[in-house]
Length: 133
Image (cartoon, rainbow, N blue to C red; front, side, top):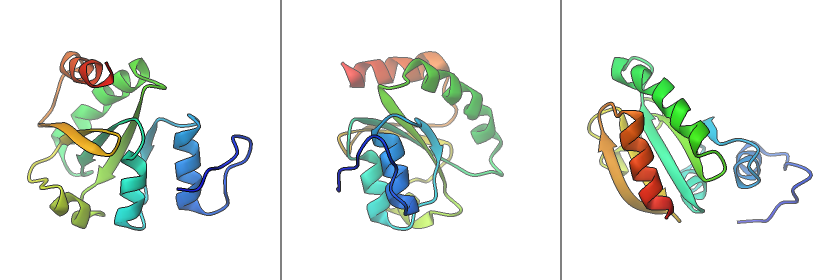
């Protein structure tokens, strides 16, 4: 992956997204991916929490404020990404997503664990703390 200066984000959208994440400008994103490679780039460095969801999914909507709370507690320590499975079915299929919400925790691009169904903040904090250690 190309390195970018901290002062200026690149012009194209995928590269801009990578820059914003890498330099801590954003930590919770709802992303537009153009390829499987974009997804891999999102999770390749550090700890990432990927929330597979859909707008029509009531438990997914209920999970959102909980994730927002946990994201604030782990700001700068983990990247949080929301993936709408209706738009990115191929990624969901490749990762074996069969139920939503599903949260997959990655460290340096490798899946560490996944949680299926709505999760409380205490459970998410525990999992993230264990991964970050």
